[in-house]
Length: 335
Length: 198
Image (tube, each protein chain N blue to C red):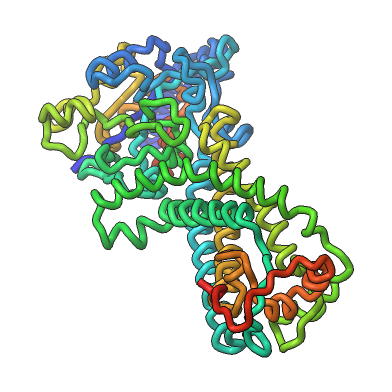
């Protein structure tokens, strides 16, 4: 045996002793109780349930959820997608209306005003409409403030003033929801009978509502577009108020996931609603001559009525309920 | 500067709630508000674990991102704090927070939640360090005195660790290596996008 082989043997022997000593220790540990064997694992729980919930010892049951990474999804929806969606929809619509205004121009009363007027909306209808309008503008602006205020208004007025304004805006938002809801309910009852779609409306939509070109498709008291607006407002109101109820009474009816869903639905419908109402405001004021009269003093010019709602005028004149002020009287100029 | 974090070693937590009590006492937290709470998972079943949870002072904090008035800020020690003067109590931070940390002093109907309150890592708030107004609004400011959060300091089994990320992660790693098991650093993946390899 050489010196080298002898030293190798010694090393091998030492290694053997070490392994022999270690082996029983490993075996022993495998036999003992592993306190970790059944232990709950965070990643496993998250994959199974998407949130980790247990049992706590304080009355606040919300606190029993210790982890809900879904908050990140909500953050993404609220901070990224909602911002983009809202910006594109509202600015896009305003651009579209401006383009329409400059290309098509104001929709004039053909042949000018006749000087004779006809009652289109009663004082009750007008009051309710303006109650909805004022509360909607408050709701819309304060709602947009919650999403866009920190980007648009905060840099202008500073954090302290913006915070004070936002607290007021939040209360205004919560309380003006009630006159809005009541107003829409009253208008729904007043106008629902005239707003069922009929064969006349198919014709109206086929001709693009007379907005493109200069034709005047037939319409009763409400034309196809107004009926569509009516039902969209009814649907939108149901959407925002029902989701808003969850937000007004947080965690009364649902858990964290329900609150997140309610907020996303509320914001999405509200943005679409705002876009719809911007279009409605445009056609009711800038876009059409004589249209605003219907909601200011309720008396519209007969020529306007014949042009836009011929079937309704026929019906009303047939019942001989027109008001005919003296020729040349300008008592009913638009407000 | 340190990167302050909490780490709850669930294999050590005995659900004694001393951290909860210590927090409430140290910060004079109002009735109904729990900046920290202990939740038991799989209660009464094999493999039951308890986790003490509060604000984890996330990296790229979701609460700060969704706040409509930008009332949150992050200190040099990476502690996420907020200004109660700016908070409007909208509740959005609670929807975004992965850990349910934000608390509100009132029930919350009709948007009257009051000013949000949450764990400050015993760092107070934007008022002057250790001033009475700071204590009244935000609770204790131990960090500026060189002390760690009361909850972790009081933990009887040293399950709850608070301090610099690298140091507490190393303590936890050593524990796992020595005892041979560990149910993980709860919330670290969600809060900091990292886990402690054991």
